[in-house]
Amino acid sequence: VQLQASGGGLVQAGGSLRLSCAASGRLLGLGRMGWYRQAPGKQRELVADITFSGWTNYADSVKGRFSISRDNAKSTVSLEMNTLKPEDTADYFCNVRIGSNNYWGQGTLVTVSS
Image 1 (cartoon, rainbow, N blue to C red):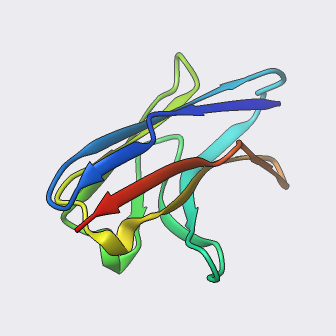
Image 2: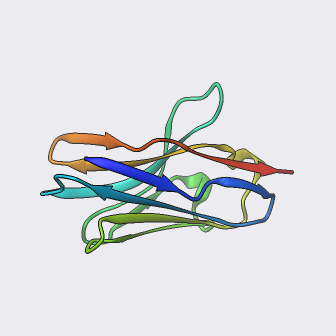
């Protein structure tokens, strides 16, 4: 299973970015897809995830600002990030679950300047 993430970058506070992640390989049983982030010196944390049927879950810190979506036909998951804050600065990682296995994409850096 391979995960290809894209969409990170530098944005001013209050701006928006969209992250995308495409999964490929043996995807039979693809379940929950999501995004995690890790800021320097901090633990990796869940940002948002979404089930195959579309149920979503968000970290309190991003509720109302971020929106996760997925395209099951294309095996992609996206994260629309609005009203970005400097504290959103982190490496963002795509994650998918297939059965009992977790797969991670490479990080994509999001930097929000004040």
